Length: 187
Image 1 (spheres, rainbow, N blue to C red):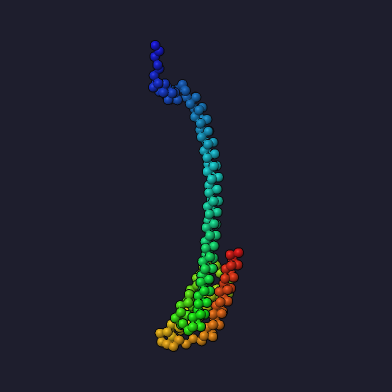
Image 2 (image 1 turned 90 degrees about the horizontal axis):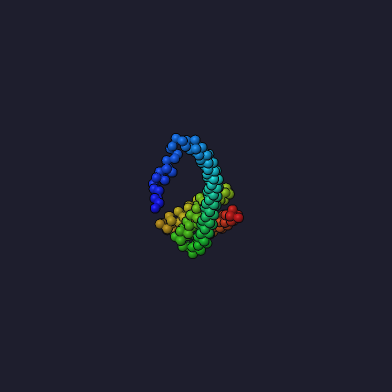
């Protein structure tokens, strides 16, 4: 019968050969070539990392640009919606003025002013003349609404309806100009 060699002693021999003094030259040679291979792999890994980092930076820049574009689009949409609400409120103001419904005139005209102020603050308008006109319209509307409210507290409400209709027409023209400006900027 053959005796089987012990596998433990083989493992021990396999793991201990680098530590034997007669193998120093062989171990040093292998160590040198493994160090060179490790250095080459490290440099390749570093190059791959730099390429991936560059791609990630480009992707992050693209995402930032897209987020900026989406925010601008949403802002323009909000401005268009605000000006559309102002236009509707202006039409309601005109109807209430014709009926002498002063509280409703004040409320709807204030909605016009609020919409104009929101569009002005949105940053979507760059036309200095339109911005100045919005400021003047806002001041006029605020003063008229204050006069109406004072007149409602201590009747009668004294408002020159023909002058107010003329201002409504000017504000309607202003809203049209703002709408055109916003649409032009979208295209």
